Amino acid sequence: MRFCELTEQEYRSFQETSPCANFLNSLEAREMRRRAGIETELVGVKNDREEILAAAFLAHLGGKVRYTVAQRGYLADYSDRETLKFFTAELKKHLKKNGSVWLQLSPHLLVRERDNDGNLVEGGFDNTWIIRNLEELGFIHRGFTTGVPDGTEVRWEYSLYMNDFDWNADKLIKHFNKRTRNHIVKGQKYGVKVKKLTREELDVFMEMEEMTAKEKNFEDVARDRSYYENLYDCYGEHAEFLLAYLDADHTMGLLEKEQKEIDAKLEKLRAKRAAHPEYKNLEAQENDILKEVTANEKYRRELAKFAEECGNEIPLSTGVFMVYPYEITSLSSGSNRAFSIFDGANALRWYTMNQAIRQKINRYNFYGLSGDFSKDAEDYGVFQYKKGYGGAVEENVGDFYLPLKPLEYKLYRMLRPWKE
Image 1 (cartoon, helix red, strand yellow):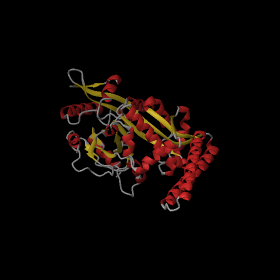
Image 2 (spheres, rainbow, N blue to C red; image 1 turned 30 degrees about the vertical axis):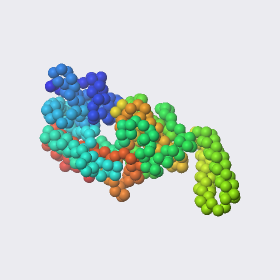
Image 3 (tube, rainbow, N blue to C red; image 1 turned 45 degrees about the vertical axis):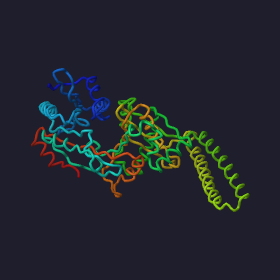
């Protein structure tokens, strides 16, 4: 085996087929780092036949205290102790030369199987051996943390797998809970559309992002416009900025058609009641139809108000989705709650799930959770929303730190302890 620098072509070929592949260890992520003025490297281990056995995308960070991050961990077989040991030993020698105090990594690997509620699955997989293998090499495991990441990568995620539903949209939507399914059907019924935003249209995205961050008190962690512009530029086709919207004229036409159908249904039922007053169940049926009348009137009234405010195109929700052959990740989204009656957020999810089915992308990742599943959790509402899709909580193995200069690392941790 030999430690070496990798070309971008070599790295991409290896990364795209790795079980640890993630948008954060892609070449596009490297370009994001470069634009931020951060020094990066692509390194790996090859065997005698010049085959790559392991790789890492390194970002050298810090000011006075310099450290290195292997973004989303090594691309490696973590059960292959020999390669893992060799790679780590060579990295230690390599990074000591450039002054790094520690090496940090957060592998994109699941550690313990969880269900839809976040509970451990009895008899489920247990990959805690990954922790032992890394600790044997000198890594310090930060532990099974919860909460919002503080400069590290997401540990808790929520995902669906398209092959569980035979790549079939009808099977998939039937799996959702009733509330989620009804919201998606309602969006289709009233003509919610989805389109890709151009770079010049990012104002719409930013407006909803900022609105949502303010509503949820996430303003202190919200990204600024330059971040999303760089994301758009660096990730290209892999970053899809989407808008769920209404064409007011089209939707009003659908509502007026529905109104006529409801009126005809009501007229027919009333005629039947007049002819058969002894049929007691007809009164309940009429009350149900009257509820449809009220709902239709409400939708038409709200739509007219929205159209007067926004024009014919009414923006409902926006989101950015990272699209790779191995995964679609719902990175960030926002909605105008004033327009929530037409529910654009679920329309975006349904649109991208169908994209995953068409393109045979297996994993659909709703992305970050805090790992606190109690009703008091800050993100409890977000968790409940994601649960409606019937996927599973996913727990990544967590953060690891390899001291390269032990005394300096210990001093740094004394001055800057981990946030609990």
